[in-house]
Image (cartoon, rainbow, N blue to C red; front, top):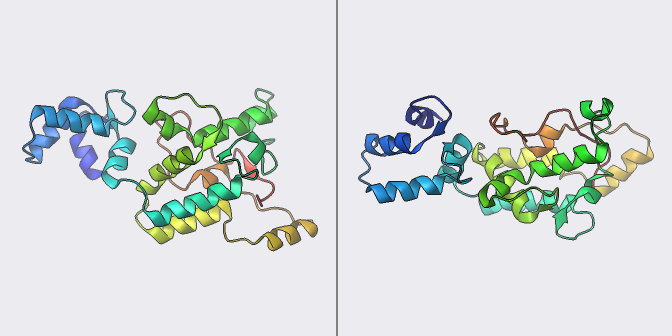
Length: 221
């Protein structure tokens, strides 16, 4: 973050081409103009003409390692109840409730609409890269891309594992879940932000998770 802020001369939390070129000179990297432009375009994942911090961090850190991908896929497979290879409304409607969401309470949105917006959270990073519209259907690639961005801000593999395990309840056995409901226990609420990841959202993005908007009401089998 410190290096990014040094490069960001106008404090806009984005880098334009002039700032990026100046940074290459400041770091004494003997790149030709064509090479600098190619590198700039590589960092500019969503192709909007600027490099924001998320894009910068994503390229510098690179993709998730195999260990983290395996944890992410464990969460995906747990949510994919019908095993069709993607997550949609049918996978989450019995697992999450949006009845307490302010827009549902106020009658501005239906509960299904809010749940579909929740799904679109996991599409945003992949769609930025491919300039695609969200469809509230989350593929494995989109899910991995989302958590690749979350992963960038988490240095330790063990912490990432703990975050994912707590968010998606990956260490709970099916027998424990069934017993809890048999005894009419009140389910522990998990906020939407916890499920989507512990990373603080980039407030420059409109569709970041809203804490306490959607709660787990059942645990996916």
